[in-house]
Length: 501
Image 1 (cartoon, rainbow, N blue to C red):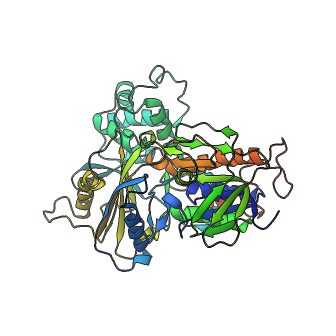
Image 2 (image 1 turned 120 degrees about the horizontal axis):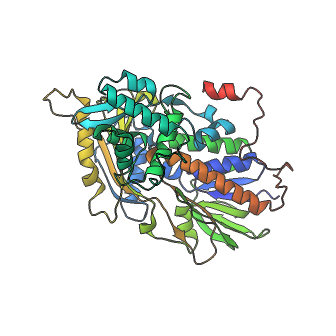
Image 3 (image 1 turned 90 degrees about the horizontal axis):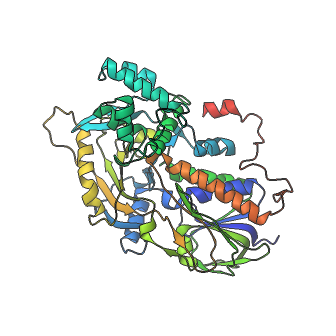
């Protein structure tokens, strides 16, 4: 194979594309990974404060359909490079596709992680109550009466088990989850709200029972794997640093990286198949006939790049094919706020429904500074209010947590704020040839990163099937591709190492 020729060219370094690049490189395929941005991570990137302001300013022009209503503070803070601010704030369930990929690929050793210290629910102005997630938490909680503890324990034992064929669930799969909790388990309003929004991560009271129970079960089963919390928090901004870790793994396995080069053209796009769109992870896939060639011309790059297949993030597909984006097809629009403060909130490094806060302990901010992320799923469209108008009340309520509830002192103001509305690409349609497309992931708050890992594995097998159509799919080294992640060579890497990190 010539120096400028590759099996696969991957455009965009978002988490899905980065995981797929690492898996394909480890499987022996020759991979080139391109991103016009000078940083890794795409829409999940972790940026310094200066980079974040530049990112926001480039989107205020309205040229990016994925991000609208962008506004930020005019004041800039010192020590910009000491911040690592994530465009996709999220937490990692201790059990799931992402944690499995981090361990199986060896990428876990490239990053740092810590347990999420608390999961709480905003109860009243200035008050956050810790959510019980285990039997020990329930029995230690002095705010729950004994009869309610018994009812809650009965639900927790039900939710953590195999409830699919249970009598309790028969005929109630589509019942609103809050109604299910009240009628079947006789839980009071407070416990119903806590379970629905903090354990099952429902968006509103109409969320169906079956999916909510599945999310609650994953929460409960994740507790105890690495400690008392069901979630991990990534250092250096989380998702962006994880994406960069997978890119590093791809480079170690022979992947070629080209960042900060504008794509001028993509030619010879011929496709023969289109994949289907899933429910939690939207994706469409088109694969070329074996032997066809894609030609990619980059700015200030001497020769075009040739490949048999292109995997592209949705935003690039919109630019370089006849694909069209329908904003009303987005799986879920999200209003986001990023705020920097010099006052810690009452529950540091915690998630309160769809709010996360972290500071120096997550290596994402300088000493004495904390980053607050607020994410508000927008159930209905269109939205007439700006991102700031939607989220300013939530931010003000959050800032009140930094002072005692009994204090009459005014709540402090944040040092920096950024507001915007994120429209994840849900449906990209094409009337002509287009590259294979990995689309934006969405879902409940703790499922975002797991959805990216699931999407990456789906795209991996589609690419393997397209480029190695024989039943014995061989990689570039002649070995049969049987697993998403091949066994690690280091004999010391195993279950013990998985528990240690």
